Amino acid sequence: MTAFVLAGAAVVLIVLAYVLRPLWRAKPAAAAGMFAALALATGAGYWLIGTPDALDPARRTAPDNLQAAVSQLEAQLQREPNQIEGWRLLARAYASEGRLIEARDALAKANQIAPDQPELMVEAAEFRSLAAKDRIFDAQAVALLKRALELQPMHQRGRWFLGVAQRQAREPAAAAQTWEPLLAVVDANTAASLREQINAARQEAGQPPLPAPAAAAPVAGLKVRVSLSPALAAKLPANASLFVLARQPSGPPMPVAVKKLAAKDFPLDVVLSDGDSPMPTMKLSQLPQVAVLARVSASGQAIPQAGDLASAPQVVRRDRKQPVEVTIDQIVD
Image 1 (cartoon, one colour):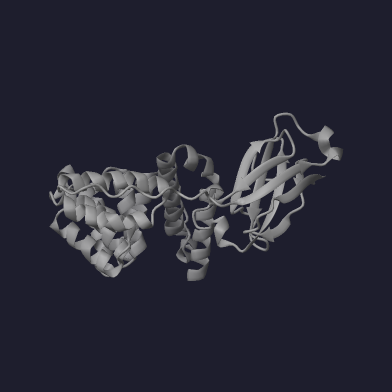
Image 2 (cartoon, helix red, strand yellow):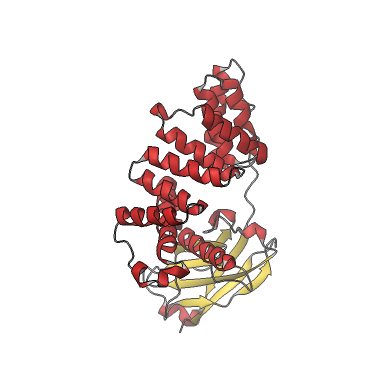
């Protein structure tokens, strides 16, 4: 049963990441919010009606609004109070309704059930801050964050929140020291904004700013040259989209890197890299080999449809230096 739940959760997260990929690039904050909301709704649905005892006729009716879902979840936790994920889900539901005190208390219950889980400690500290006046991390929240970092020193959210708490307490030098290790593990965009926060804290502490970062090396990628068969030139739809993608050779159809371009001016040269991944959990650089293919879509949709023009997949080494030559010479049935 546990393996099934984990597999289902993985599928949900992968699909959400892929569907929200355009929004991740355009509006990361909005995408993150939507991702969290959809994942929360999925989790609530499973928690409330996806368990085996949902076969009970008295419990088959799914809630039709958030308030009803919260009521059912509260009742479920009255019957089974040791369900950690239930309390976490309830806390998020309370928070979405603005019931921050109750959200804090729900996370505190989850932390009491499993007192040595860093993620729970960090969440409990976060919700204590959200429920507090002026969003201050109190002494209990700071103690939770410090204990979480004792157990998992590079817990990113834990380090960030502890630094915020230290800066709130007018300890800027400690905040800068807490944040600095994060520069080695976050992406470039996050590192730039984090460096600004660290340097502001160092300035408050009378310390010089951090040395400027070294120039970033060019992003390595897989070069692909896409050609269109002359026999299909007359069938090229006007204003069509070209998808160039790489995926696991014997794995799921979900790409590990994909680019969307206008389907014109063939041959086209494209470079696929980790920055083109629709999934945060799987990157191009993680695979020794990939299957590369291209597809022309009249509808502009990523999902293949009958009548699309496509190439055969080519399995190549991901680190090859020469461009992968792919030719669009098939019509999708």
